[in-house]
Image: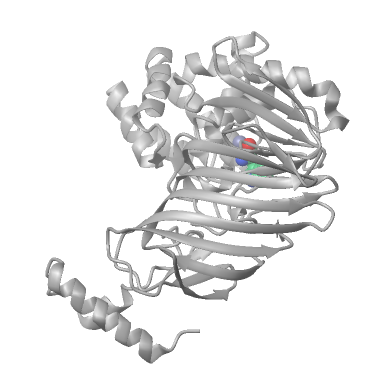
Length: 469
Ligand code: TRP
Ligand code: ZN
């Protein structure tokens, strides 16, 4: 696809351009300069070296999709707006499977090649550092979900008898659209999804217009106008019963259930409303324009916090799991992790929210939950796994959830209720729609409490043994 010689000539031309107008960089030797011209195949998360990509930042995805459940075939055109963070002779997108028929950059045909889940795009002319560009990718095929990775079963775009169940954490977005598939690069999304008449397509955010039906097909257009990580994007398709309205607190609410779970619709709608409103008083104003949830007839046995529309796989969700998935709208979705090893910032907080929900309802206390975990024997696996360093080969280990939540409870005990709950609100407001790290949380906790908390966080997050009390 690319001739090395021609590539070298293009690189040299770009290099000369960069030298002519860029800041001088006497230390960089030509060879280093040359290698800096291609965007890296990974965004720089050492635990997931090929996830995401280097050299650019996506600001918006417009996904035009057609899906036919009978043939399990997805036809897509992804239009991606991005900014080059360096001069680029080529850059990568993540895409798993599919036949790519056409790629263009700023309207001009681009050459491309595939290797594993890396789609490499070489624009007709190199992109300059700082320039905005638009890449368009046309692709089609039968989506192939990810199997047996990161200690999960299947995830990604999973075909079901009446449509598809789409849950992508940590890196399954590539199973249905090309992109920068890592949470460090957030972007807004538009979805235009065409499905057979009678079938509903549910994506993130809100409908931008009434569904249009013609020729036996219906097109749904959704927009998520707040920054979102790729793994939170969904286009869940199937037969659904809907209930729409607003929460008592004034937030748009949409519940959708597979007809098999018709009896769960009202409960899902009401609990989602009550819990969203309540978290607004504890974690700060709800960060998105709508809330709700989706129950699909796919026995995942788990749920995912898809932005604005958590997805529950094959069971009637109770208050605990709804409290968990809706807490993620603040912890994980509005504030997203920069690297996967900090996953406790999502799961520890969402698990702690379950304990807080019981406390709010008077059905239990966070202290009792903490104690029941603390009583686990010294050889229990949560003590051997430090939750502050989630491992790629066991990302969703129970410790990330429960010992992560215990960390917050230990912190609450050390700094007192008043400072602790102020800290939660300050954390969500200071980093709203942004990206965060554990170090930033520790620094904020120390700043707000005026206490040295290194030893506490070290024992709870980083040591492979049960902390002493
Ligand atoms: N984040 C989910 C939770 O709320 C767990 C999860 C991770 C998941 N990857 C998933 C769920 C993929 C569904 C599909 O705990
Ligand atoms: Zn979770």
